[in-house]
Image (tube, helix red, strand yellow):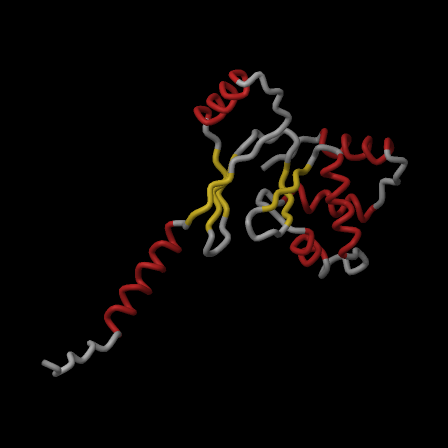
Length: 167
């Protein structure tokens, strides 16, 4: 996916506003983050960069992701596992998530009916919404199949119970 060239300019502008320098390390981290469309943790990004850029430390990766978030270019998300992940935010449509409780897989989806209903509820309650998120927790298709096959195996491998001969 081709990335919006404004992202780099916005990040550089944000660094200037914070009186921070544009460094080669921050640029490498930004580029690696922009190439990745899926959610990513600071540790995952650090491990991805480490072989080619051993001088970039974990704390630099984490701080840069926080700067991207502060600049409105990334968004922090945390599902029920408590792990903070980062995703693209600038020029990306709002979306919601389906999260598997078994394998942790997340699926992004956009549904205009859900968005319209949320806007209606906000208006009905004369509420000024600033942000919202919808996360639906359950089990993905693969984990459902896996769970069903495990149950079938357990039923087949259980020994039949002996009936007592008491009368």
